[in-house]
Image 1 (spheres, helix red, strand yellow):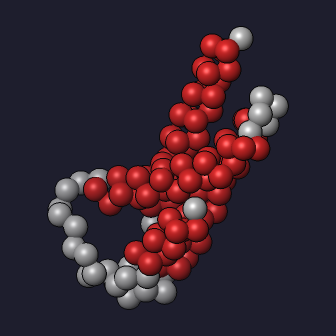
Image 2: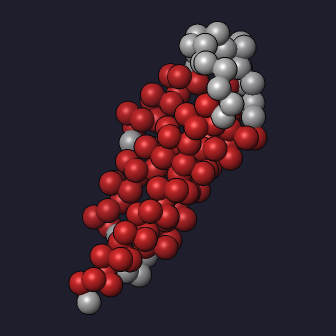
Length: 117
């Protein structure tokens, strides 16, 4: 998890002209969602030993909240980098990536639990 967080921080610390992306609509938002989906996946992997039937929903909410808070701090960090700008849509994409992974994890655990019954 720390490695992914460090990678996100490193990429956020680069000036705006560091890696020019192709002019494809939504590519930036997709990159945010993928990066934060991977971050959420590492969070799931770390929490998996502590997950049980009674706290799965709470852990899924924690994953999404973590992605939200880290996304906000990432955007704040970018506000100090030349050529970078702060975007609420980037935060929304970050949360979407985390939410997608949290929902998939929650549903897969629920399906697995129902099958074992």
